Amino acid sequence: DEKAIRCKSAHDLVLKLGHAKADAVEKEVASKHHHVKGRVFLITGDQVVVHEGRILEKPESDEEARAFIKGYSRSPPQTVGSVVLTDVRSGRRWARVDTAKMFYREIPDQIIDKLIEEGKIFHSAGGLRVEDPLVSPYIISIEGTKDSIMGLCKADVKFVLREALHNEKAV
Image 1 (tube, rainbow, N blue to C red):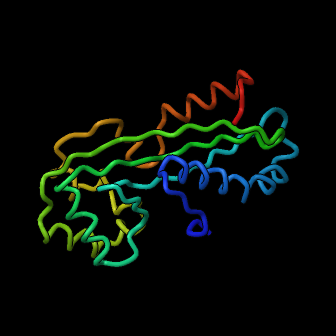
Image 2 (image 1 turned 90 degrees about the vertical axis):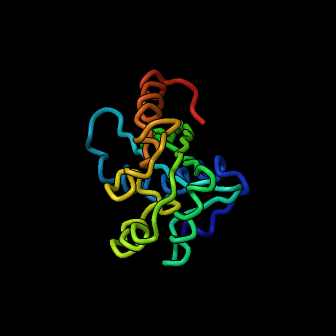
């Protein structure tokens, strides 16, 4: 239950959630892959949106989704996402946290209505769906990478894999 894990810091929250997800499935992955020669890695992580000092997770109602999206033209939301790599044989872990920021022009109510009707925004932290064609015309700029905003920073995945493959210090 992700809601049982709370932190004041978005950085700490996404790390704790990434580790908790690994804890929840690590033994199952190890048992299913015990016959595999070599190392077996599990990648987990989480993402939240920070907006106006508040940590936003997935919107739970139409009203909350509308408030989140309307607020993004007032001040830019920032995504905070973790990548946790676990070596399921040894239990060692490597982790990274990445941030990205989006700048939006005002998104019209009729577009917000369509986004709510589609329902996909209820599966994304802060209701952010930068890849949605309805949203893209309202993006002014992005600080960071699109993959980071979408929930999994490729550069961080490569970084933790390189660390693990070179047996560097785990967290």
